[in-house]
Figure (cartoon, helix red, strand yellow):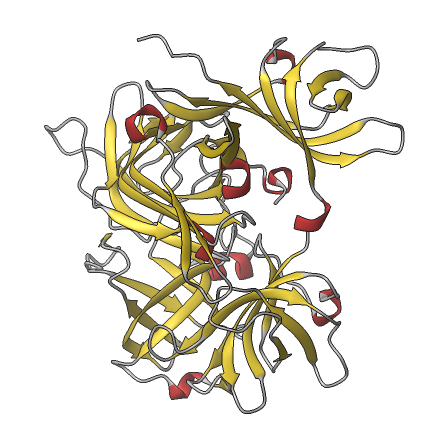
Length: 492
């Protein structure tokens, strides 16, 4: 995925955080003493696909916010997540007693990374456990410090790019895998930004008049108290509007009236303050409150885009390749990717319905006309096994994946006399245009792991780099993202 389109900050952070991260929030660190002003922080996790493996399991033990004077624990519980399950974002922690102030880093502590390959029947055939850099401590260093303001709300989306993080090293006839984590972090300020968030839980406190309910989930422990001093013990307020699509346990469209307290549901949506909608209608939008990132916190809620009724697993999530465009019956064919319980080369018909959401991996709304033959797709739906028809609630298109290519090598001249930057690769020297590229320095040493944004001019001769982009018509390689590696032991 293209980090430029999201103003992403690449960091080698966590591998995990990742949605996985459905983690629990922990208690705070930092100084004690007298009461101080606090704000709200929510951490989300999402991921880019990787072709090399079928599962990338990461175990995260802690997530912290670091400043020059303080360290605040946002999540402190061991959790294991599959990074490749994420076509959406997962809430990994919500905490509303984070001390107000300026923070410079997000630190993730990992304890294990497991790479798994499966055969066409889904059986594990190979497992690898790369060494974790920095004894599992990975620091994310944004281009700019971020602020938690008193009674403010800050949402941090962590996007782990698995395909850029796992490197193959061949030596002595054997293949080894090296973990050099590449993570993009977005500071989300405006309401209803970022990727769709996925939460599964039990429906409570249905408000039929306002079409709201609480979704109580064991996926996260929420340290959050709203303006009325109600404690949210693992529950999130969910709002339904005219754009929300609801599907019953059979995968067919239904309405709010069919929600039942005590039943389970999966919700895809985006966060906002409860009064954001009113502010927008009144034209009184004060999002520029503090450095463009935060505004006064009211009650945080999840605006539902899709609601799937039923226990976890009622709706299948299948990855595959579209074999056709959507036809006049709102159907397209999809070849199911191996390792998902289907025989190789299985083709299903995907039935789009009233309310079916079609989005890209960044959460942008798309339409039926955007589905094309050869597109990578992930479909949430209910399978009619008699007809081999998958009734879809959510379709995610990965439109950018086929176009991106990469170069690996070392920096030669910077700048060079041709396109701007010369790279020595195994197949010869290439000239790279990097005028609009995002450049990140990734550390993967015994001392620390992490990454931070740098300038193209900071790249030095001999430095190892991976360059992602496309071939330009003038012979230059047009770079979107450059990952530079610092592998020498960091000073103690």
